[in-house]
Length: 283
Image 1 (cartoon, rainbow, N blue to C red):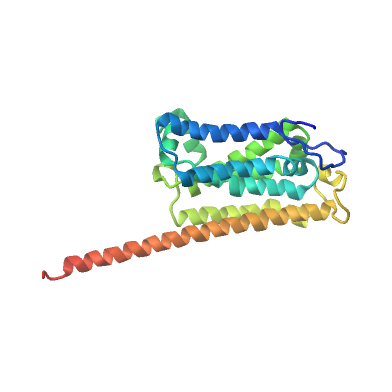
Image 2 (cartoon, rainbow, N blue to C red):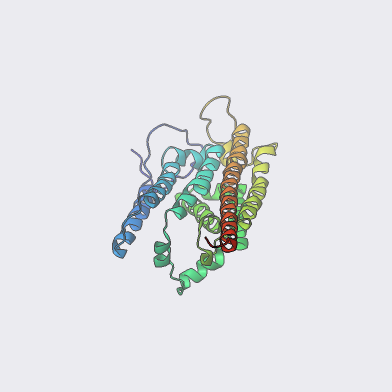
């Protein structure tokens, strides 16, 4: 059995369905799960089941798309699987991880007086987070950059780590609920996510509308099956990026906006009741 640290592409290597474990995936997953539970134990705090489920689901999403076979397929055979891995890291793993960190644990990891929080606060302000996310998304999908990173285990690991890190920064203003931690409130949150969905169309359009395959790594890879060429594979990747990613954003926008509208309606109703109560004659 072949064993590797992280998924990487080897040009010209014929695909086989022989399991290849990636040890780095299991080390990272174990560190994330163990570190989260250790933080609770050291703080003497009980584990909140919903937060534990969200954190565990986020780690599981990272493991599924990074382990064999998706990790290997996305690293050197199919552009569509490479984009699928990015979609899962960005729209599944990152928001679940952020949702799995309670406020007290965030205060423990990032005290407001610490330099760590000063750095995080600077890069999670919504204009900076939006810029960093799009710079990483576009930069890592440029053909020369992608092909240089994917062919080595270290480069592929760095690419995945950049995708996850940029997604965490990007989701921070939209996912966190603490106003003093840079959380956006509606309707600014909806505008922030809408702007992200528009910008996402730029790289996906290149994948969908390019007349030729953009990535030699995937174009020259030995075919996995007949009738599915590099052009179709690339177009499918662009569709996944734009449709799945855009749909996830629009669903998030809709849910957040409906919650905000409901809260505003309840607040208005409570204010009307208070006015009527104060103006009512005594019994």
